[in-house]
Image 1 (cartoon, one colour):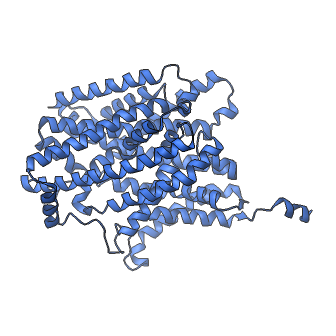
Image 2: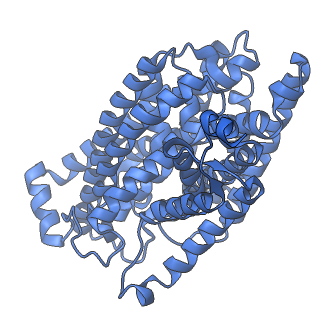
Image 3: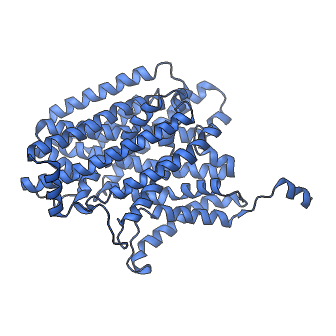
Length: 492
């Protein structure tokens, strides 16, 4: 079976390189960073599904039904609110300023300290988050294919990252927009086919499946105990701000949006993308319920498995060769679509936010060489995080990723909120990085002691909002009321 799966993997990789060849012809630095702002909005919207979901959603969401039932859907409902904020608040801001990196806004609003702080936080956040997403894909391929061939994990990781590096090297974001379309198609197809395979094997209807899930206690959608981390209001609020932070304030996701021709098309992209995203997440939860019933019917002991491993164990062990191949194609599609955009976005952020490539380097050829060097270095960092994390993986990665995001994206959320909703100016700008560091530390202390401090209360994804509020308050403390031109005249 390993040989069959590997053959399909090679064919899939070949498809990516064919798309790369067509999309990167006559590519320039502008093509790499902005896609020449000519991407069709519906292509961007569709392709962003794969980039948003990633291999973590593909495996962790179905597997997590075993422990959290269907309560993750509360997070999905929060997504809808978050995308409305992105469409009506953030996208108009980015298009009005005509930015390449969204953190250029922070530079224009507060100065260089805020610009670099936002960018560095994004680089750390995205590097960790996307590397963990990609690690999950590599982890599954390693266990079910490459371990049998005695290939070490670091070699598997190196080969996968090299493939992504090569097909994004020339065309950058333009190539990513089109390869994500292919990858989203394969991922959704794999999801639907797997659901059909299990339904046919169990020979049950949706109603019978729901009844069986209800008997086993898997149908809870809204957790009503406010003490618990998955309390439905926490999930909805957390989902909303996770979306604002991890999409609207994330260079990776926004760079794709900003390749659309204008603000109207970018908003169409967001609205259509949101509808598809909610539907696909509902399908993943449906698959999770099916997997639980399938495991019960076939006598599969899932009690000792990590939730990330339930889906692949069933796919490889009980769905036949076709089911295994479909699973691998879907997983690789989800993994690639997350990682390719990340490499491009991190390269863009380093070039535009840290190096300030357009301001300090006028020669086009020098810019071109620097961009390629940065792209390679980012790929090596990506590989390093994957290899290090492989030693510590012991629970659902979707929980780990959202927890990491709660700490790392919080300061970005606070910075943008202060810039957009306050007219105050920061007086002591050198303190901005310190506040961005202290806010997550305070959040960690609160989270670690929340049960003692708040009568058994456990923080969930709403920790991101608290982190942002702390950052906002810190910025307020070092700011001053804006002095109008009229006031200045009176003072003089």
